[in-house]
Amino acid sequence: MARGLCSACLTWRRRLDNYSAKLEQVHNNPDKYDARWLDWKISEARRVLEELRWREEGLLRNVVDGYEVESLLCILTSVCRSELAFNTHSLIEQMSGKSRRKMYEILLAIVENIPSDLPKLHFIQYLKKGAYGKGNEGWSEWIRENKRSRIRT
Image (cartoon, rainbow, N blue to C red; front, side, top):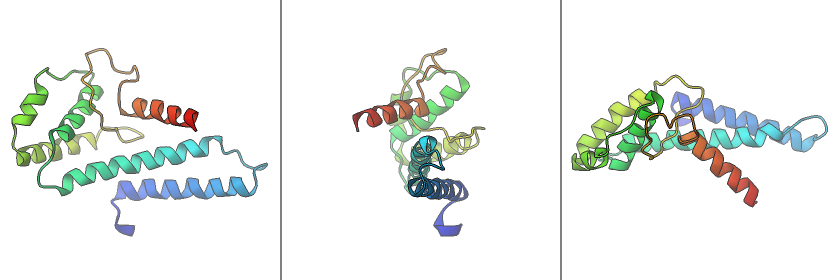
C-alpha cells in the first residue's frame, strides 16, 4: 500500500494526479492542448475516490447504519435489473448494528467484484423492475448533479 492507499484508491489517485498534471500543461499552453474532457475526468476521479472512502469508512466501523446496507442492495438490484421488496428497509432496521456490519461487508465484497469500468456509486432509490438504464442509478444521479452545478457556476 503505497501512500497508505488500497490498490483501487492508488489507481484512481494516480489518474487524478495525471489529469491534474495534463490540465496544468493546458493552462501553460492552451493552443497546443484541448482541456474540454480534463475537467470532467478530474471530477470523475474525485467522485470515485469519494465513493471508495465511503466504502472504507463502513468497513472501519463496528456498527453500520441501515442506509449503507440499503444503498449496496440498491446497487445490486440495479445491476441484476431486479427490485427490492417493499419491507426491505424495516427488515434491515430490525437487524442489530453488528449484523448490519456483517451484511455490509458481504454485500460490499459482491459490489466491488461487479465488472465495470467505474465503481458503482451507492444510492438509495427503490427502482421498479424494468426502470433500469433510464438514468436512475448512482452515476446518472452524479452526472445530473454535476451538470447542474456547472450551469450554476
